[in-house]
Image (cartoon, rainbow over the protein chains, first blue to last red):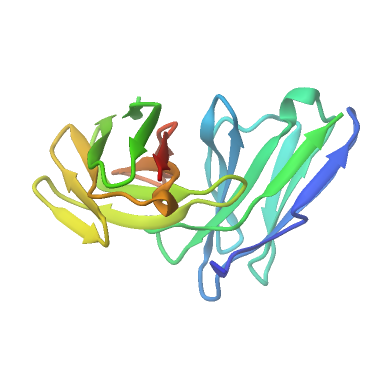
Length: 111
Length: 111
């Protein structure tokens, strides 16, 4: 157990739907990062939050959004889902800016 | 643009057959280079961080080295349980830049 908790582990949904992925960082870590991993693209950075504030943004689609709450857990919202959004979504946390610890991921399947 | 290229994409070894994985990187300034191990369907697991050229780190059968342009992950006398995808990532200097990952090397060790 890495200390980073992601739920749900698996999600199957239809095109056009909206889903929410949840991440609880390791105790004491203020930064949360979201990455998308598909078979041919590797790990792609989506967005970073630090202590509730957005700090960095990658190639995140406008249909995707995220937030970090006062208790430091984070949610990634994916809407108007398309088949191409099927992927593994990982959350990672770190105390500062080095040494990410990853969760076990959420496997999203859009049908 | 910060970039990480890993080679080979896949490597098949006999148990006990030592080899090296390569990670070439282009980055404006390097804060650190990371190696992770990822098992199928699981989150990346941290292995090493290297900060400066000439630095080496070891863990069991793995040794990571760093030069100004690339890093190597040497695997000595591998066992079947070393089979996994090995990911390399760079942490660029400056601002809130997240880790940039390569696509990984998929290692299979055959008994």
